[in-house]
Length: 104
Image 1 (spheres, rainbow, N blue to C red):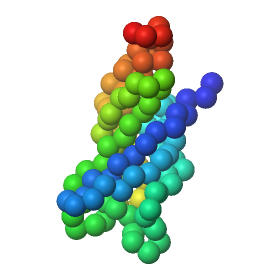
Image 2 (image 1 turned 30 degrees about the vertical axis):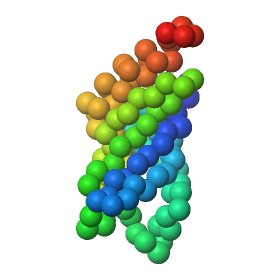
Image 3 (image 1 turned 120 degrees about the horizontal axis):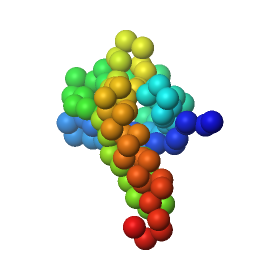
């Protein structure tokens, strides 16, 4: 069973938002294959390492509906993830989203 879903990520800094995409593993909460838009990771570093970094959020979209959720970033490893409690809530919300009848 594939528990990987595509998501959008938003690293929020004081003056800017750095957008990226990735894949969320709904089994573990790990976010993999993060690809930044208009941000050079090697030259500019991890957004979470920036002095004006505030937080990161994720967005799961399905058939025009969206679920926003909190994302943790480990500055030492550069890995993005969702906490177990946030993941549990996200799974419940996603199940409702994926099984909702059209137009609901």
